[in-house]
Structures are given as C-alpha cells and as structure tokens.
Length: 184
Length: 358
Image 1: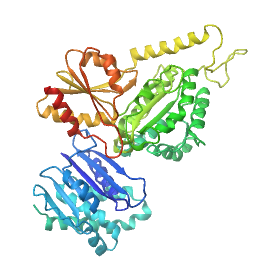
Image 2: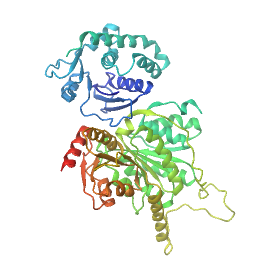
Image 3: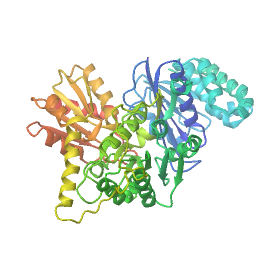
Image 4: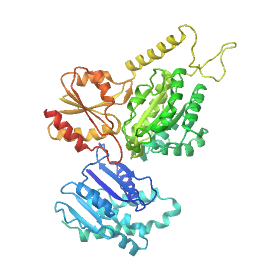
C-alpha cells in the first residue's frame, strides 16, 4: 500500500480536517501516514492545502511533487494544481465552485462533484468536505469507511456527537456519487 | 504501563516535542509565542501545570532565555522554544548559559529569513546553531529530528546530553517537521543510570563554608583561558562519544546524498526512487549537527564516492561536509526557503541523476 493525495481549497472549507481524518484513519488501521499542511495566516478565505502520504511501510517524503490524487475544492486550486497530478491519477473537482471540467487532460480519472449543493441537500453547507472525503475513499479504498467514522467520533468532542449521523450521511452521499459518476 | 504511554498517537511534531520534554521531567518552561512553534507552549501551558510544573509566558524572548538560565542554575530541567527571529534575540542568553555551563534545552522551529522572512520551512539557521550563535566562541549540542517520533525521542536525548556535559542543547527543526502530523509511539523516559546528580546546582546543601558559583565572568590571570579550554575539551569529548547519524543504503553506494531534518525526508524518497532505477545511491543523515558526524562521512563517503548535499538554504552544512572529507567531490543542491519553494523528491532525483552520470 502506497498512496498520496493532495487536498486544496480555501480556509473554512474543511480541507485540513478531512486530511487529518484520512491520515488518522490510516494509522488506526495499523499503517503509516504523514499529514503535511500549508496554509495562509488568515483564519478564513486564505489558501489551505495539505498532503497525505499513506503507506504500509515508513513514509519517506511528506512532500509530494506530483500527487497520485488531488481533491480540488475551489477555482484557484484547480488553476494552480490540476497540471501537477501524476499521469494516470485521479482528480476530484468540486463542480459547485469550479467551472473548468478538467477535460484538457485525458490521462486522468476525473470526478466532477457538486459538493456544495449536495451538502445543502443533506442540510448543512459545511458538509461539503465530508462529501469529498467520502468520494475519495470510495475511489481509492485507502481506508475502510468504518475507520473514518471511528476517527471522526474520536476527534469530535462529545457535545458535537449529535452531528455524527449527518457527517455519516455526507460520506455515504459522496461515495454513492463516485460510484455513479466517475469519468475516464 | 499507562495506556497513554503505549498507544500509537497521531500528533504534530511540535506536540511531540512538548510531550517528550514533559516525559523527560522538564518542569519549567519559559517562552514567547511565534509561528511555527506556538503549539509547543500551547501544549505545555495546558499539561505542565497538571504535573506541578511552571509554565511562564514571558514578556519577551530575551526574558525567557534568562529565566531558563536561572532555572538551570538551580538544577531544574527547563526549556524554551522559539523560531528564528526569536532565537536571534535569545543568543546573548545562550552565550551566558554556555559560558556558565548551564544545561537546558532550546527548541528552534526554524522559519525562513533573514529578518522577518517567512513562516515556511527552512534550514537557514544551521550556521547560527552549530557555530555558536552568540559571542565568545562556544558551541551548543544541536540535534536535528526528521520525524514526529524523533521530535519526541531527541528532546529526551537533548536533556540527557545537556545535563551530562553541562552544555546547552538545541533541537533544530523546521515548519515541515513541526507542523506535520504522523504516528507517535510514546514511551516512558528512562534516565541514564550514570547521569550524575547536579552537585553544582545553586540549591544549598553544600558543605559549610563552601561556595557554589555559577558564572561566566573570569578575570584572574589565566582563569578565562583555562575555562575556555575546559569548554572546548568537553566539545572534543562529545565529538568522540556523542555523534549520531542514520545510514540508509550506504554499503554499496557510489553516490551519497546527505541531508538533515525535513530535507532528509525528501531525500529518503528520492534515494528510494533512484534505487528503483538501478542507481547505487544512499543517504547519510546527520542527527547530531554538533558534534558533526565527521567519522560517518569518512567511512561512507571518503573512498571515491560522489556526494550530493541537499539543504533548504543556499549552502551551509555543505561547508562542514567538505571539511570532513576534503578529497571527496561534494556538490550542493539548495532551495532558499519561502512560500512555494519546498523541493520535491522528483527534484532531488533529477539532481541525483545529473551528478551520478556526470
């Protein structure tokens, strides 16, 4: 097992949270993972990116030049990072905010997912990141959905456990969308 | 054993330093916040009081380093942490600690400079750390972790070495190692059996009429020279006994990549990629930057191998590599840090290929 994924958006979209969940779930399953964030000094609205490397042996570089997969949540990320994805890799594009459908490349698997609209449908715009995570986990099978659920429960303070069912729903919606709509 | 000391955790490098320090018995912390190391005081401010320790956010970096000197003179395990501009402010105090033979741990989660620079990962403070950043011609112990686990492990070692030699010790990290999260397996601290108690510490208890003095002022004829010679004799002993490094695939290597800290992590993947392409390449990673592992360079890179030194700066450690192996060809590849300037394994691999075939 050797995977890496780059996640990018603006601050407030929950980019760093889903990166954390993915890496922590990987470790929970007994594998190795590094989570390397980079973000602006702003609390909201600045660029937020993170790279997660997952492996069944020790992780070498936490920095990845050409990621195997990229989850691009806003137009700026699409513009900046779409070209970096490794040939044969996977691009998840948040089509709610990104107009470019990525058809300029035919060497990738692409998933155009209207994460913001889907999140509103479930009941909260802030669930868009969980929809994206669900789609990626379904595509990559890097971890079990159950490990994500366990991790989420672990990191969430008890008082917020009432939000777990909604998050679960969002993960499932993302996974279901991926099964239906993967291109390439 | 407590469950909290055996379970594999998922934590930031900065948190791992704080956890390791507390486990090693550090009960005094003095600091002033600065990115990218503020997770250290944040963690310690929460956890140290529970252990009966004293966390103090001082009014400045200068105040905090002098508080560290004071706590150390009283025999306590104490630390401070900061980042490059803050570490510059601390240099006067570090020089006084070195002169007064006060142990203590100083963490520098280095950012990019000079001046205010940026908050991105950088190794621009190598010279300042290993050559004696303040006045007076001294050295401190400098350890360079390359993983979250090593942040935990090396801070324990830093306390032990610092106490053993009465020389301040620095953990030199950067924003990659400090901010990234990885798995950490905490383990209980075990003090070395031969670590002497601090008879010199200013806590009373001496023989009647006998003074204990901790000072860096030596005015008598020949006193200061003798004192400096004593300090440098300790550095020579450390050079002999305390060098630490990691050797990866070096036994048959025709090219030796050398790097420390986060650059070494990037290089590890580059070396693996090179091996997959059939190139005989290995990695030599100094863990102690002072004392510098000259002996390892002589062993692995002094017999006709080519050396590629990679740093997140414009070339600093490469000088020490060249001094260690004066007859070996050493080439340098550096990226001066800043936003968007972090090199990738693919980039290092291209350098390996370029020089391997040349």
